[in-house]
Image (cartoon, rainbow, N blue to C red; front, side):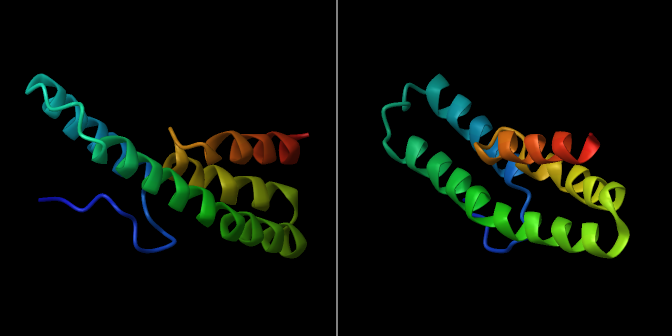
Length: 101
């Protein structure tokens, strides 16, 4: 049994969501998609990603002060794959776009 919860701030939220979607597809194929744990687990992963985003943004802000806008943008772009598919992805992409101007 795999635990899809992300325990640390460096977690791969996007990977956890993809893995969980694979479980959901297999369960759906077995007609077990009415299990309320499916939606709850996805919400847990998404909430953890949202809770982690402020620390990622703080690191980028520190990078901006120390090394400039480009370093901050690169720092956020490096973290972006972790947040793909999560609700925090849009905010992260907006911040990258802001730093690209």
